[in-house]
Amino acid sequence: MQGRKRMLEHTIAAIPPRRVIPIAISFVLLFALGATTLRAQTPPAPRPVVVLDAAHGGDDAGAMIGNQQEKNLTLALSVKLRSLLMARGFSVVTTRESDTTVDAGQRAETANRANALACLSLHATQAGSGVHLFASSLTPAEGTRLTAWKTTQAAWVTRSLALAGVVNSALGQANVTVTLGRTNLPTIDSMSCPALAIEVAPQRDADAPAAGLEDSTTQAHIAEALAAAMVEWRAEAKGGREP
Image: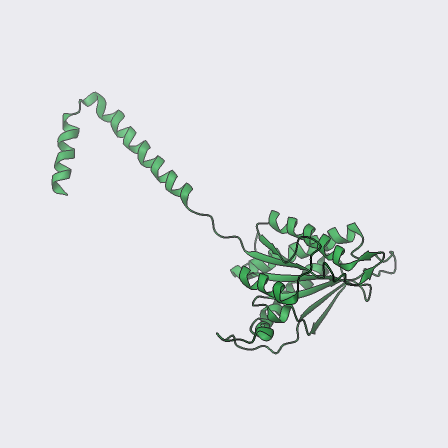
């Protein structure tokens, strides 16, 4: 090391004085360029993942909502919501992107492989009013390495209920009536992430005609509210509110 230092000193001493400053500037520029290159090569932080599960599909048409099949409406909502979430910095994984048959096990596997921040299972109905939020009815339990497939969600129920609170708040701010519940959910019960079933019904206001998920304006309104909920949920997961 000392030998290299002396060699460098002799090299600099041998450089004519008029050339020392330009050479020094060149060294500084090269160092700065190298630092910039290293920063540019630093990989970006991974985006949080939201799984969107458009219920039904393929052979399973679901309910008739007006003159439309539920499977088509849930897919339309999934497409709208996916676009909004991606614009807000999320990665989005979907259980289906076309009119295909996907069973409950496949849907759960998709969510579990994604290491998701949340999974929203999208449904539509003609019954009731506003949006019905359902979390799994499983009793909360500690997670173990060997968990029965159909009760995997038990380790996540507490977080799913917290997620329901965030979604409820976002929908309320959007003036959407919300009903909270817990029920047996075969798809969600096998998921290892915070997960909810979101069932959209017509908003039955006294001073306005009822409009459900078959209405494009309602679709957009619900999608915006759900996207806002996911932004808030991401902030809570980080331990603070986003600006």
